[in-house]
Image (cartoon, rainbow, N blue to C red; front, side, top):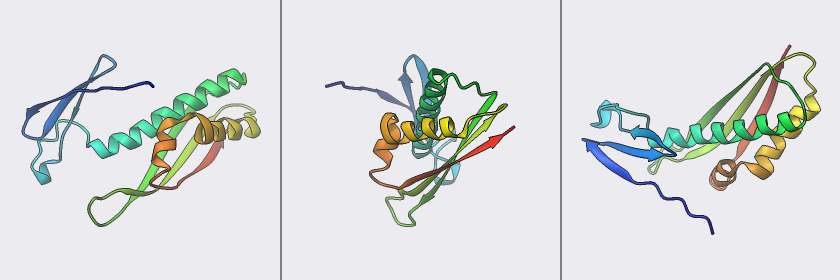
Length: 139
């Protein structure tokens, strides 16, 4: 069984510093609730992880399919519950592709494979909130 371990160190007030794969990451709370805004909020990092995970999957799959994309963008919109703990209740991803004669069937297949088979972040988040997506292609 694979195991992941990350250590965090309080570096002041509400800010924590971590080392992830040799990259320093600082998370913090907003000033409105007593933090110093030294880094992103931890819950939003879940969304960043989702975009990063599925983005890597899709680009890898498209390369294997020999689909050349000029540009790719991802957006995630999340709805949260009103009560504590404030959890994400609905997630929607938009995949944007730009290129010449991009085959929609292959774009759809790459996104579907990421969402249904490969993206571990999607698999975890789907257990708490439905994830929907759409695909936009620009020539």
